[in-house]
Image (cartoon, rainbow over all chains, first blue to last red; front, side, top):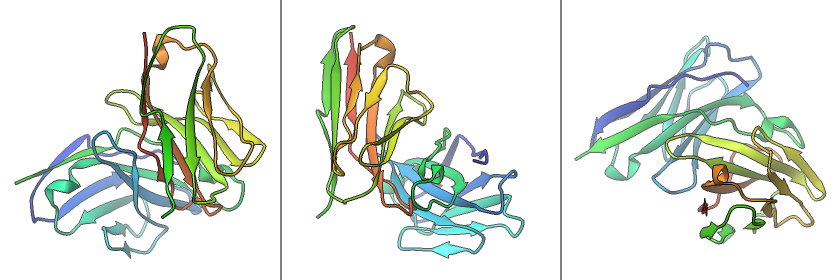
Length: 115
Length: 112
């Protein structure tokens, strides 16, 4: 799985967009970008994933650069409840009983949303 | 609603004792995982299973074992607890696509 690099911490004002960057310069063509977050003392929560096209769901948007070497997770209107550690993970698509189902967590980015 | 549960939520044990942490999911997922998380760090994979009777070692499997006798459960056993195994343990499950892993609430284990 490709290695990812994220800033250790970021701050954001409540109501503003939070843009969390992730570098994955060694990503392979068959590797997806996944984002999870972990609110204090809870289990991680899946947010979104993508391959090369931008993706949006009810939680966030994922912007992947054309060369796929970096991506940005966007929380359009951050709230205090979005304060969490955000993990960017790159791995192959899983299918059946493959090693692609495993997740390798780095240190993530501690996002603090301030009132 | 389907869910994944862990028990106990908190456990204090002594060095050398055998400890088993339970994980139960009602998603009917094939894939199940155990991670540990130490203070201020990300999660590390201990063991995982892709189905009944299947188990595999993760990156930090020494001192731990798992068995998968049915789809719903993947208990994690610490054969002889050590202080270095004091940690928070998370169980997770996913379907065969593996796109989304669902995590349990965690078990905080203290080995004294």
